[in-house]
Image (cartoon, rainbow, N blue to C red; front, side):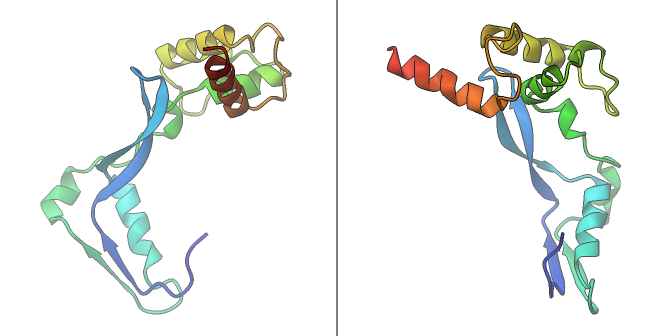
Length: 145
């Protein structure tokens, strides 16, 4: 998907990337440098329908120091939602063959989270979305305090 009529793009060289914050247990948006692939993708947004230009607000040297590709989201975000979806279809997340393998610690944290919420032993409907479980958990906590 792209916006129609874009002729000029100003590339700041940064992106807000969703990242898991281990202390809070929540995903947060963190500002980080873009990868070369993301920078080239931004360039391609200018002039899809007519001549366009991308203005990069960083040096060629900074571009050369960028990572080639961004870290896949599955390797930097909470896996609890993914784990719940796999659990719902009868797949064990600990043995699932991911295209981009997440860290073992992230898988363990996701499974532990679902166990604490009662989602692993069938206490929640298997088609219940993780965010609904999380919101219900918060609601119950506030109601009982």
